[in-house]
Length: 104
Image 1 (cartoon, rainbow, N blue to C red):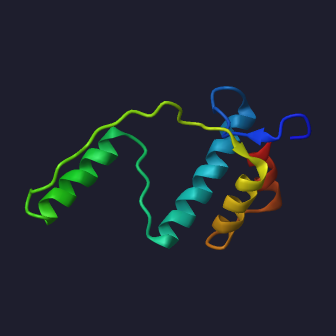
Image 2: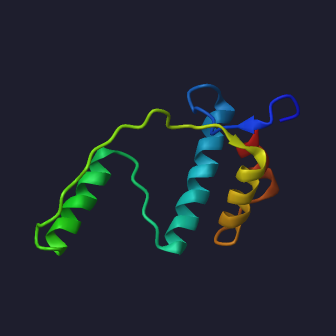
């Protein structure tokens, strides 16, 4: 971070460390999300399954709006990443080692 104050999630195809970082971050996000009752869609199938269940629960009178994302991995400030990890750390264990891997 010294030369570049922004950071982003690591593309797992870039390095072995990127793969580890993705796994560590994915576990933290999953644990924190589960304890908060949040769901996370990881693909189109997840979204369509969720929408079908929602539609069935509400009598089928719902509409779906589809939109595209310009960028999936935006750059974020190190401070915001730290705050997000602190928040997730309230719901699941994130070690100093894991933080270091994520922020590398």
